[in-house]
Length: 148
Image (tube, rainbow, N blue to C red):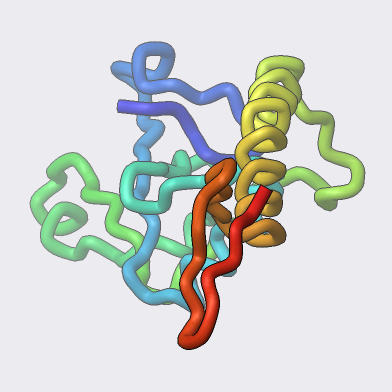
C-alpha cells in the first residue's frame, strides 16, 4: 500500500500498521476528485486510481455512524461519507508547500528528457520530408527538366 498523497504527510502503511490510521481511495465523482486533489497541494501528477489519503486528514464528522458496532460493543467501522473532503492537517497553500528534493529531481529529469522530443516534433512539422535526388529527371507534359 502506498503512502498518503497529501504533501508533507509521511504516513505509510508499513509505519502505521497496528494503529487506527486508515487509507481512503479517491472518490469516483470527478468534482470530488478535483477537490481532493486540490487539498493534496501536489505539484506533480497524482494517479487517482491508486492514490490514497490517510484518515489523519478527515474529521470525525466525515465518517458514517456505525450503530451496529456501537450497540454490540464491536470495533468501529470507519466508512467515509460520500461527500467527505479532507479538511485536517493539510498544507496551508500550494505556494508555501516545500517540494521534496526527489520530486524536484524527477520533474527536472522529465523536462530534460521531453525537450529533445518536442524539438524534433516541431522540426518535423515545420519542414516536410522532401526527397531530393541529385541529377534526377522530372517530366512535364511538354518537356523534360533536368535537376542538378
